[in-house]
Length: 141
Image (cartoon, rainbow, N blue to C red):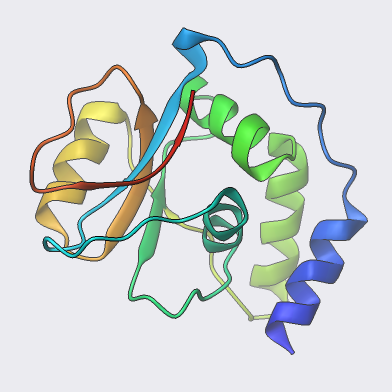
C-alpha cells in the first residue's frame, strides 16, 4: 500500500529536466554498511530518499535545502525540484505516514555523521575523499 502511494505521489509531480552532468556536478551516494558490500541503482536511491523501504537497514540523511550538493542530488537522482519534494514531505507528515530524511548542516558534518552511524546513507560531491569505513552505493558522473 505504501509503495503504491509513493509511486502515485511521485507520478503526480512533473519531473525536472536533468542538467548535463559535469565533473563538478558528480555525486556519490555513500553509506556506513559496516563493511558489507552493497550497490544500489538510481531508482533504489531515489525511493530510499523519498521514504520507501528497500529491505536493507538504511536510514537516509540529507543536506539542507539551499545546499548546492542537495540541489544537484535532487536534480540528478530524485528528478524533482526542492519545492516539489517539500510538498511531498508535507503531505507525508500531515498524514502521519513518513518523515523526511534527517538533515545535516554541511558536507563535512554529513561525512562525520555517516562514519559514526551504522546504517546511515547520504550523498556527497564526488571530489570528497571517502573514508574506508564507508561504502559507495551509487555514483553519478
